[in-house]
Image 1: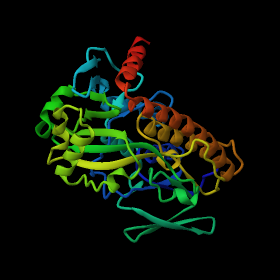
Image 2: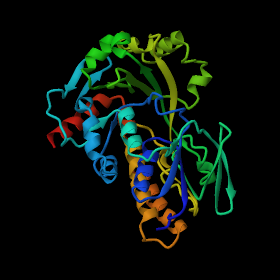
Image 3: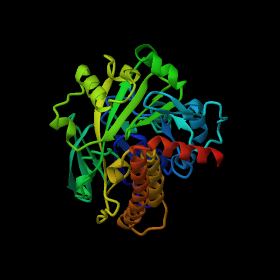
Image 4: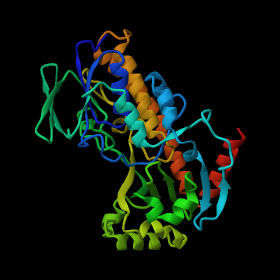
Length: 385
């Protein structure tokens, strides 16, 4: 085995990095995950994930965790309301039967991370390890972390997300702005702080379209809500207009002015002293990106193929990256690590490009003036199938 007696460092403890660690440990590979969170009790933000056949679900199957996944997945989270900007319901699939046979079962990020963490050997994850830099040492790397610690690894795998600090050591290709900016909002104890919209969702998710703009949200099992509002604008629109989303008054004023034809009911999210808002301009890497493989360094997930979230592909592609890379590193198909990594990366780039293309297509549909009509057609055809 190519990685026998080698120390592997995975930088980043998201679903991709943790899945990879689990799969490598199943082959008795020595691996540590370096995660910037101070400990595992830190709240996991982000939307509920739907895992897909052949990618996310396949990863859980290979990791021997599929049964555990179904103990924690949320069937009601897949139930969808399609509405217009005035919250008029155009499609309600809450009466549709749904179960283990569903194509894209959903799970909150927190429980999914716990499943993966619990599958790892003790002390696999080194918490409070925010990556700062690394230097080549003999045939490996010394990694430096913000807390002053260092670590050696024979092979480093960047799983540190869309703003990866390791990616520039692999590729100098820059991301491209998609033309769409997304505002992410998180509200804890949402039944208290956003009761009307929480009740409206019926423990599922809501997708609203109007005037080339989108608002979507879903409830989570911890009682919180994550919502997003997205629209087309120049890359630095918020900065150029001096809008500070940490100022709740400015945030609400922005929404009322930009989403001017939307119902005032949506202000329960934006005119809310308990909301945490994050500005997220949406970027993607070129579909034709390429680079020369290294023998002791590679990357997976958003670090390799950053893309907008409008097709639900990001986490799924990252989890496929994990099982494809684990296979390349532990099978006897290749004579050396560089060949194994080169094969993996060529396949990963191709898969990432296909997922990115689908995502960009969805982005255009969801922000078109007739988005609601297009989405109704799509979901009705899907349910007929």
